[in-house]
Length: 128
Image (cartoon, rainbow, N blue to C red):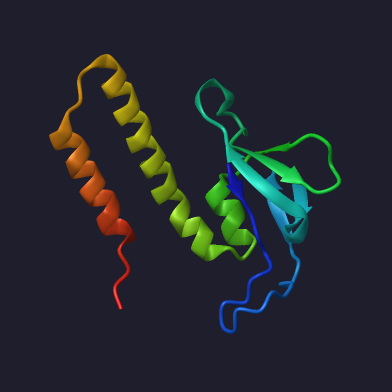
């Protein structure tokens, strides 16, 4: 689940509210960007036919099922930096999950895990 923040001005590190905007969730559903506080991608059998992401909106008890992915919603909210990091987080979680399952089964392929870890780290390394 991605927690969303829309209140950071990176130029001077002050906390300021960004301009709220309406964000399409698909199939005629919209929410204000400053009222969305969490996104959860749907996986497995939950995903499909207009079901991509659970969206928690302030003031609404149950999450809204959006037809758009969390990355697309984040970009529409003006959260470009978070949207570009989301796939890396997903890949890191997948790597950790595979490692835990392989360790439980008593078979760990260190070459494969090492290769995937190096690729993941190369994608996150910041160059000055």
